[in-house]
Image (cartoon, rainbow, N blue to C red; front, side, top):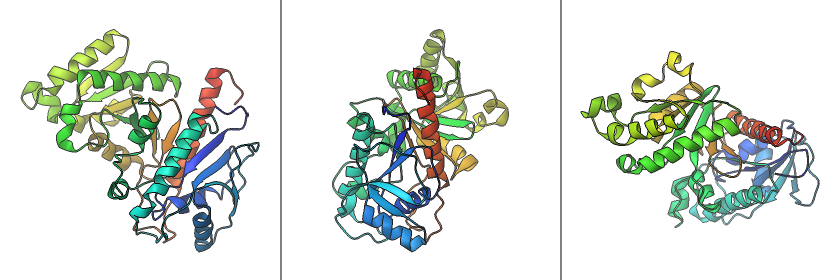
Length: 338
């Protein structure tokens, strides 16, 4: 955490040919009660401000400078070079190194205390892989860079929170990835971070089954009987408030969710379609289990919107606001001034 009372947050602009950089320009138009730094390309951000017709003065980030509240139209940039010309909507693998460099700089800076939280714009996994670097997502990248921490991906839209037992895996690999050990670890982290980061004294968690109808007593799969139920029983005995395994097709009912603080889905497309239907464009991706605060947008690079001026910054604004809230909660818990 930074020594100053004023929080300092870093935002990564993401894939340069996507909508991320122009969302950062829009983000810069509002006042924020923090020092705001964007990791990206200073020249590109200034160019996009001109295209959008928005005022923007960019200044180079100086780690020795005292943090100051963000002023509309003024943006501090951790400047990183591009390898190729940026054409909106047309990603170039030559710029994959630029994307990875911004993620590394933002992650390391947050780990080392230069920033209080990290907010990420969208990247394109395929472009980075096409450049020859295996990359399955922000979540896994940060976990590895931060010393092998176990990350838990959770998205929030209003009061609905959906965490994932597995993240970016092919569907045929999901069942094998859900072991007693991994599921227990994910649930323990989810319960812990709901208590410590969100100040929920006794989190109530609904747990999805993996199979249709939660396995139908073993007739539609045995993962519930052999893996999920034993883990839930063990953790309930340790004091966790867990309901399940529940059929995913009936779990997301208002009457069930009204009495829950979070849902654990077994895989990406089991829980996130519901959450994104409930709040797409306003939802926030929060990575639990890391030693740093990291939030992100709920959408991708939207190449079809890049350069059009029609992309909404609502999710990036929500991600920044969420990160600020988590920083303030952490400071209050530590007895520091907010």
